[in-house]
Image (cartoon, rainbow, N blue to C red):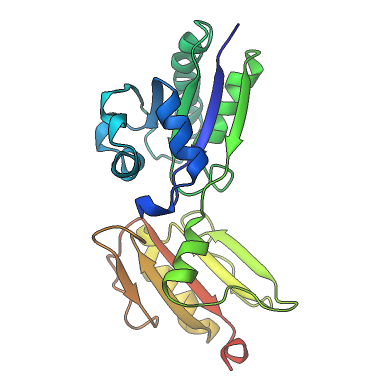
Length: 231
């Protein structure tokens, strides 16, 4: 009997926001995969080990998947990761792949899951609290009310949008292009709040575009609301 690959969201940063199901799966399974060259240095590990200390003694798989826009390099890394995971699955061992936030939202895990399933193995997704829901809660900001729309954009990939659609915009992974992002935000006239490293020890909250530093970190999430929505 082959093992199952679980894509498990550990939430945005606060270990208390890990779900009971995520904690249980880490405790019940021996093989834990993490995206990075050194498993114990990954953000997902550092979050999860606070909630599940026994994680430190598990079999940890370091899956090297560096951030790049080179699609061929990405594909090679994802194939290697899938090969590594499949070696354990065919031995009948489950593999729990830990990922930040929720595994269905811009997660590297998804590329691995597709390849593992193509090899004939079973995979399952386990929801985690998303970064934008956590950031909204942290800043007491309602994301959407009544009939408002919610637009979630990966700012690192898409900057041409003028934020002119009705509703609330969430800009994820904004840090690398923050100067350009700030220009778009300023031109939009929207009310802005940003949380950097939400739920972590080095968390910072900025409540206007002017407050946001140009050198904000990769894990910077912006919520931009229409001015009338704040009334």
